[in-house]
Image 1 (cartoon, one colour):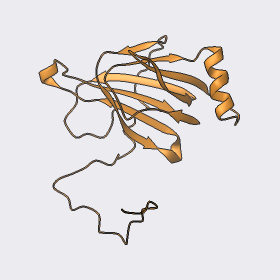
Image 2 (cartoon, rainbow, N blue to C red; image 1 turned 180 degrees about the horizontal axis):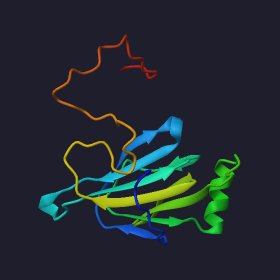
Image 3 (cartoon, rainbow, N blue to C red; image 1 turned 180 degrees about the vertical axis):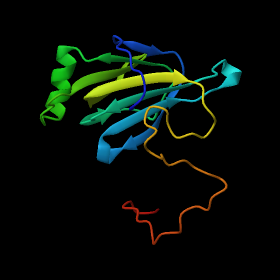
Image 4 (cartoon, helix red, strand yellow; image 1 turned 60 degrees about the vertical axis):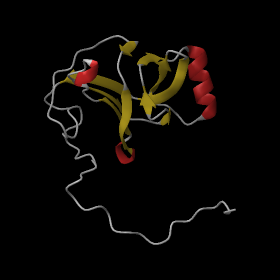
Length: 154
């Protein structure tokens, strides 16, 4: 995110549009949620929500509407009980839908932004990564060996 202007904002932050899990960069502890443009729904921009220095998470792959807020002390205690590793500089962000809390991310920071962009770009919040994208014009990966299923077939 170097070279980008950042502004401090308070949480909660409400996203009145669909957001989906776009990337999970495990080695760098980053989660990226993205809301794609949908001109038919009146959404001409892309929204990205980035969590950095992620230590623990429980989230869905899609939210039709999302509120991100800091966990209450009681919620933070329950999250710590489930994963007692040290948080260091991290805090718990609760992901909330219309039906209530629906996930959390323990992270050092959260960023979000909205802008127009060409279809198929990687990310404007983390442009240093060439995130994997499905491309119809490129060959798929080679076939691997057998895939194993631990459940017996009937």
